[in-house]
Length: 440
Ligand SMILES: [Fe+2]
Ligand SMILES: [Fe+2]
Image (cartoon, rainbow, N blue to C red; front, side, top):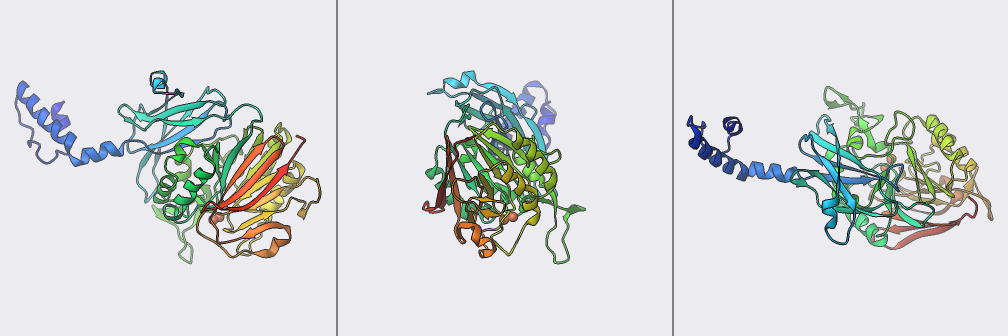
């Protein structure tokens, strides 16, 4: 036992080879070896590296009674878990915490470090209640974090929406995320409409966790993938390149997406964690993966919206119906979903991709509606520093347009009122409007 523990990778200073001595001698050698090993820089680095990182809360399809958490550790552990409890004013919750084992998934992507991601569902929670949780194992635990479950019924709430972060995330998204927290500290969740990173690479996902800091551990997120979130195609562990030398992506979301987040799987089969819906305090959110299988998702959306008890419906996906950048015109997405948005009186459609700002008037059947008639507001926005020239092809449908501004949006739903405010990264109000809806 001692020999086996001592022999492999002996650190500098350990007696070599472990001497063939008996009883008491072995104890002494073990003590020396153990001391040296435990205090070696390599082991200290390993220990600190094993504290869970990339911890993120995600909404489930039952946000009043459950919450998903995902985290990374550097090794495979059989007993990694989440511990959670109703929050208490002091530390009384510690003794009352429930332990829920985590499931493990290896991130094993060519050209990336191997990493071990864990996920667990905190279930049987009470609505509208503050909970604390930590993730890890044995002595390797995260700090205790706190979140609030959704309330039952149509209680007013706010959420924050971000268009494409995508580029220079550490450098230029950090202040925007932090300003969003200042503007809407009580937001119940953050929603992203795709192109989370420019490339589906581990370093960029690392920036995505570093930039908002602790926020991802305490405010849950929901996201849909953009084209930049699709996985690279590989051949013999090398990324396939096209004739121009550009890296080729497939139509399947990157494995990095799947290991880093734990999102609902109640949408179209084969598009798990990228196409799903959930209800939050009187709003039905439909999250679409606009990269693939649009007709199937449209049929699924038809079902989801045909039995919708909520007053409000918000849809999020990446590719806009009314393009505002690069002379694009995404007819496929428009053809697939526009009839459903009109049919079911969707209030708000949140998109990205065009790296400009374009907020429409209320529209139905590709036209501006007047008076109190029902219509849908379509918005393109970007949170990151990449910008395109504004394309004015759909200008007649737009109420507010622009480019060159990093933005985040705070949306508040309160009974028959939906209040929308877009803010620039410096915290200044950039655009706002309000929708009212008395019926359900
Ligand atoms: Fe995009
Ligand atoms: Fe983008």
